[in-house]
Length: 341
Image 1 (spheres, rainbow, N blue to C red):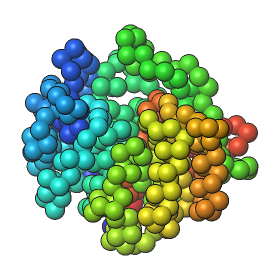
Image 2: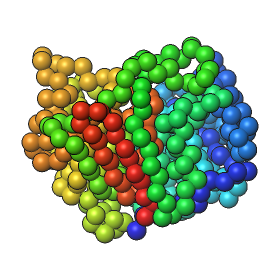
Image 3: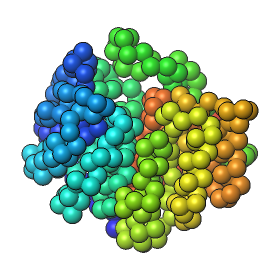
């Protein structure tokens, strides 16, 4: 049975810790601005020491990162945890986490943060939220699609949360652009697509993240999907969502084949892929070629260019929750309904 954290309420404290990358001193203002925005909205914010440092592709030594994250989980005054952003080697801390000692508490993020989200849900059955990073919430106005993360964090068990695809997305990051009206600079029309034709409707238990990092959990205790389904889902099927940060088309394909061969898709209903800044073709081989081959191998319906991950804005997906995704071909619009059951 999936366990859902208590809802975030006005006056609660949000903990910010960096289990992967910290924030370089030249960018500390991003954290301060995001903290100010949450405080303006009626929340308290506690920022851990790891957030302010960065060395050798991590905020601190793995023991320090793990200890600060666990301290925030154990601190009864902190109700929600939002890392500043992702990074590269969060995987180092996984063996240092006392998984049995974690009580349900919302943790939100994407990129390398999804490595922890994925492991936490698979190991413990605690729901986690794949959505915006803390530093992306630093503007006076929160972008409408991304801002739905609050609906998720404030929801009670049994609630339905309805989210819709964006009208436009941001084709390229502009870190030096002003944050007015919000951080994202949306400049390109959104169009969800499917492999094949016809309207698409997918249902299952959500699970996924950034495939650059979670692929390395295959064959480890943090990627035992069969046990996760048996122990926490009563063998209900999984509706996968993925995003590709940096892999070219052939690396992407090898990763998807690894998931197939590891049995991750044996009890599944479909795959949703986010827009990607990567996926460069290799000798004429494209990501779409890969998706078509994966569809042929698995028989699963596939939707792509959805609002997930590194090309904002993004819908917030809840690992472990029941979900329904619908897409109208010809219109390229999608809808996601999440039920916390």
